[in-house]
Image 1 (tube, helix red, strand yellow):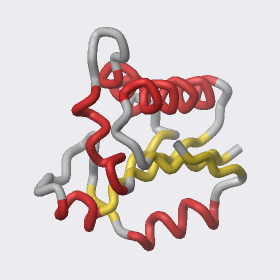
Image 2 (cartoon, helix red, strand yellow):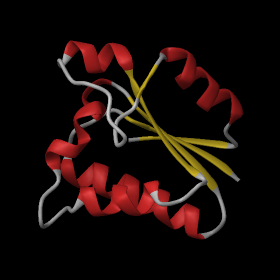
Image 3 (cartoon, helix red, strand yellow):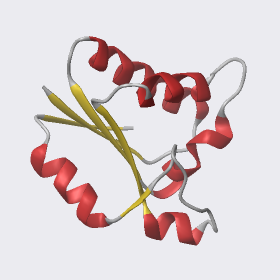
Image 4 (cartoon, helix red, strand yellow):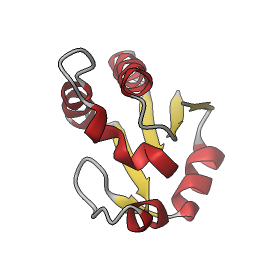
Length: 107
């Protein structure tokens, strides 16, 4: 299955759970794409010992069936640059994620 996830919040617990689910889907053999939009591009700032998002993201990105794309406009608004964990994309990438995924989840 191709799972598309749209992450639009910087809430630590929500983001942690989104990446936990994404990692579970990868372990089942699925392909997972995550698009970061709005506050979602700030997801890394919320990592903590209780909700270790960084650990989940490292695990996620170690798979060749995983992809993260961040809204370039949202990055610019927040004066945030593109990184491996938050690579810049466009609304076209969001459209493609929705069009090509079997299931789309929003957080």
